[in-house]
Structure formats: structure tokens, C-alpha cells
Image (cartoon, rainbow, N blue to C red; front, side):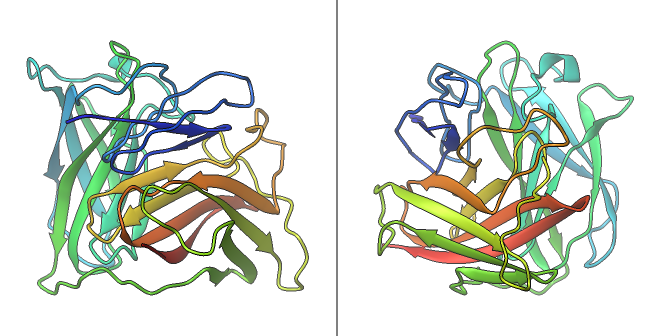
Length: 286
């Protein structure tokens, strides 16, 4: 499968097959993997996946229950276990796991910890919905220095199943703060780049300027298509925080270049007053 990449002015974005280029605030050219892959650190084109993931549930998944889960990472070439020492740290962690349910309304971002068993990592999660759940595991093998975004079925919760929730929304209210999403073009179109802007206001309508660093950025933005397969991960433009005392906001600018039409759920992940907050938006792409 051929991979292309997007990196624009300090932003990394990958959706199915994306091609573009830019510079980070330090002037370093980055490349971005696509088709369920993203790359924050490589200067070369993304290769085929070298790692696979197997899900080892420790208990049956039930709605609103904490589910201890283990995953095993192995090399596709020789089935050798992948250790933490085989991986590069990216955005403060060596393993990022994004969890989505098929309605796209339950999004969770977790970081597995190693177990005593080589190549096996564990984390806990709690499904908010019934239906199918999948994971996207974000890792960078030291051998290649190229980011891989490996996906697998996580669990089926209960017996009730729903399709993607395609509710359009470019405004949201979470914990008394107001969030708005806007683009610099009237309609989002497949293959057409757009500049996105998320603005954060408090309940009085005043700018929120105290966004705290979260995993080496002031925000993480994840977009997932209604096909439950095409995913993108975006970081805001501009200088990334290097000190936990730094603060960001009220505006978060990012580039968005969808290479697939249809509905996208866009999730904003930020940190305020020590609390991680997830804010959902919904948009259509022609």
C-alpha cells in the first residue's frame, strides 16, 4: 500500500492518502504517515507496517465497567516481541493508543504500561457505549525512525449495535466553557486543504488563555471518518510548550486536508486546571 504524508507549519496530519509538507517551529521538516498512520518525527516516507498488535482482553467488556486490557506488539517479519527499548518516545510517550467505538461518540486516549511478559502492555478503559470498539496504536520503532499507526479490533460491548452518529456540530459546551470550530473555506472538500480554527471561551464569553501542556502540545485533535477506518491526528500550529508552566489559547489553528468524503467526527483533547477535557465536533466533507 502506498503511503503519503502531510506536515504543514508545525502541524502533522494524516488521513488515508495525504501529501504535503511544512516546517515545525524549530525549522525541522517532518513527514506524516497516512491510511491510519501518522508521523511526527521522520524525514522519509512511511514504509509498510513492521509491527502488528494483538488484543488480549483480561475480562469481558461491559458498558461503564473498567476493563483491564493487554495488547501484544510483535514484529511482522520474525514475530519477535517489541520492547519499550525498541521504541522511540514521541509526544512524551512511547506508546499512544486511541480508542473509538463505532458510533464515533466515545473517544479515549490511553498509554499502556509494560508487563513482566516481553512485548505485552496493559491499560484500563471503560466503554461508554455498546457496540464495536477499535484501537489505533501509535508507535515509532527505533530501527526505522518512522511512525506506525497500527489498528485492531478491541472488543464488542453488549449485543446492541449502532452506526456512526453523524450529528453536525461546530460548537460545543463542556464544563461551562464554549468551543467553536471554523474553517477558512465554505465547504470542506475531498483533497482540498483547509485552515481550521478552534476557539475557547469561558461562560462569560471571554478568551480562555490557560490551556495547559498535554503530551508536549497545547492540544491534540483527532478526526475519524464515518467508515470507522480513516483517522487523522493533528497538533496546533505554532511553538509547542517546553515547560509545564507555559499556557496556550484561546485559538488553536490547524491544517485539515481530507482525502475521503463523508462525515468526520473531530475530537479536541486539551487540559485545563489539571483536568483532561474531550470536546466533540462533527463536519461533512464533499
